[in-house]
Image (cartoon, rainbow, N blue to C red):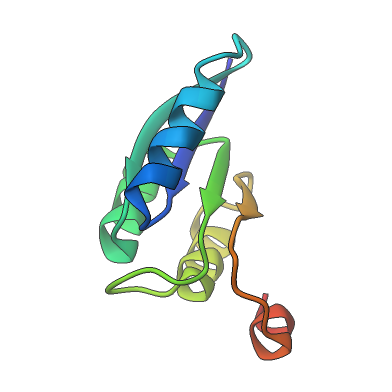
Length: 93
């Protein structure tokens, strides 16, 4: 079973993602947070297979988290899930 961590600051969306992922037997949510720094720290401890990540989070931006995960957890897949559309941000990721 693959493990998933969710970094999303909008609580209703975070809860929706958790509930949706509970419908599958192939994935299990091991944690979630609405705060960027807290989420990043938890990812380093939990080492999930997949991180679903919003780009705009309090205390630490998604691009910083993405770079940290790429450097420290190279086997972890990061799925960017955001309503932000900016060519500057897209170029960063």
